[in-house]
Image (cartoon, rainbow, N blue to C red; front, side, top):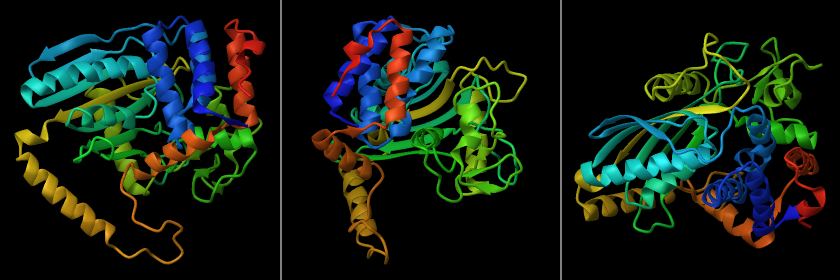
Amino acid sequence: MIISHKKLGSLVRLIFHAMGCHNRETTTITDHLVTANLMGHDSHGVGMIPIYVQSFLAGELKPNVSPNITVDNHSILVFDGKKGFGQSVTRKAMQKSIARCKETGLVLMGIHNSGHMGRIGSYGEQSVKEGLVSIHFVNVTDRSPSVAPFGGSQARFGTNPICISIPRGSATDPLILDFATSKVAVGKIRAAINKKEQLPDGWVIDYSGAPTNDPRVLEKHIYSLKDSEIPEGAVLPMGDHKGYGLSLFCEILGGIMSGGKTIQPENIRSGGLINNMLSIIFDPEKLQDKNVIHNELEKLIKYVESSPIAAMREQNKILLPGELERKKMSHRRKYGIEIDDKTYTQIVESAEFLGIKRSSLVVE
């Protein structure tokens, strides 16, 4: 079905209110999830709601949490997310870190024990709106791994995203590089399972390490099933050994250095979805004159964009990091967001678990 972002937002607000989130937190989470769908990142959009509801009902995800500062040493800040909704607690931690960066010019920020943070690019956007550069390393814990190391046949990592953001002359067109260190986000595999679609070549392997196009090799992990008729496989790392190396350092930097945990099995896995993040935030004007940065950056971008388009490419120009998402957002704001039937059904059933009547969730 096609749903307008406003109607989808109204549905989502009902669900998070039912979980006890106050108005501000509900708005933060709703805007984050719907924006992910608008940008084409459906893997991090409203399709996550059933997992959130499951974690909430299990006591593994808590509403209305403010992150607690555990380390405050000039330019170093560390926060405990206390299993709060990640979109809310991480935004609050970023706000405090950005304010500190305005004073010091540089902040090293760690946040651990946070609920799923969602689209990490949103925190890069939060930085660039204040004229700051940010770099983020994230790991995933509290559940089974989904991504195999290079050369391995069994999963040992989460999707472990990295984000780098830098402002430009206009706040509306920053450079936002946001990617999972896996070949693909697990949420896209969830969407393929729901749509009964096959995966492209090179995304996943089966239990023996052989290539497969069947997304159901990840259903046990995605839906926290005790058993599945399909033996569990794994997602491949992006860029082979390069993605594997980046994922390992996300565990070290995002997991250990943030004060959190890694995915190694001696750490308890409750079946929730916990993120830990290490972020570097700095004021570029403390390093270089603003005009010098702007002029050189724009000349670099112009040079990159001048490369002739390769044969067989669909786009008619070189796209900058973050540009495709902005184009998709413009299109989906106008024409609506596509939600597959199974995902919509899962969202409605999750709402009913919270005591919301199905009749109040009609969005057509």
